[in-house]
Length: 300
View (tube, rainbow, N blue to C red):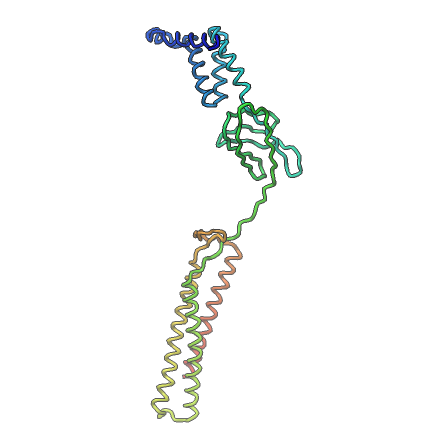
């Protein structure tokens, strides 16, 4: 064992063999603090925590410590300084110009507030770093920092952050709307067809001039057609009354949402006008059906 380490170890053992009573009476004794810093520095060095180890070595290399311990800690501090790695970050914009208004972070710890050309020291090992600049896309890099790797250059290029306008939310129309709406349209179509057939039958009977003694089967046929038309009209109007409710209560969803999550409806001018047009279309259809029903009833 080299003489320097032998003397440091001997001094350390002597310090640990001091009676507990004596150590308890003088907890702030400089020698004990120097020995503790020496032990802590070696533990940190083995864990590759070079920055913390160097701080501990500076404490035990202080002139207030015993000379043999100062000599040992000074030698260890020199070795740690040589092993301490450091990085120099170089950032440029898209035009290749140097920029300084960026910062470097590791997790939530800010390593550099500005890239002013100064080196930053890190412990050996894997580091996940994030570089941020206002108005640019953040950059992330995973680096393996090695002992003795001094002034390693890390070059990055920031690109302008392009803000993409989010697409407006769209209604997710329920299948029930299409079913009910189709039922309403079919009901109105049947009403029109059956009503025309009933009017045609009634006109034929009027041409015969047999009222009020027309054949029972002919009268029943005309009445059946009109009854079926009335039922179709009722079903159609009811369906058309429910369909707008289903439409306007349909949730809004983001177009890019894979899970189709419901969002609160956003009332924009275009959407309000579109919904109003849809509602008025349903009103016009229902109104036309009612007018036709009144016309048919007057004919009867």
